[in-house]
Length: 122
Length: 111
Image (tube, rainbow over all chains, first blue to last red; front, side):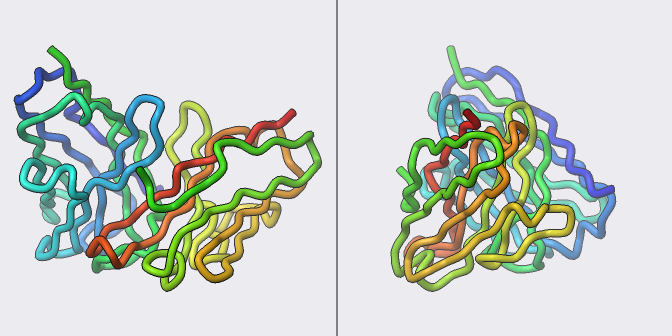
């Protein structure tokens, strides 16, 4: 069974950092691009960042450029999101999502994790 | 604010049909494939439609998608109470590099 399990969320003060992790299983992780998608309180889905199968290509939504860094460790079947200079508007449920292809851009996303909650507040 | 616009809500009685629209532009829906996602309360989002009108295995044919120009549509026939939730369209927008964009979301209400 294909499974994505996120971890690392929590309560953090504005300006601080947090690192999210995603453990993948049930498929050949290194063969697929991956993404982070978030949903803020009473808001819709927002794509945050994507990374190609080999980690060479990364993309970010404008609002997180320069603050967030996506990475992956194919040997550990893991995806990461390093978040710095966090703001209140980054408060959201963050989903780890699998792409059906190796490369970016993404045409669609086929498997979603259950998410990990990040709350930015003093 | 998303570049893909959906109605905030649509509703119908069980067994009836609902249509969810998704309006974009030439830089997104106009030249790229559209996908649709179902987000039921307390669950992870699920892929319903990809490539404008293709269903992943396990998705019933009550769900169908189409695209015309810069707009796309999701139809749900034989509406069931378990279908109540949020539905999002999505595609790639060439005006914003390699960004994927989601629609504003539509709540499907089963009366």
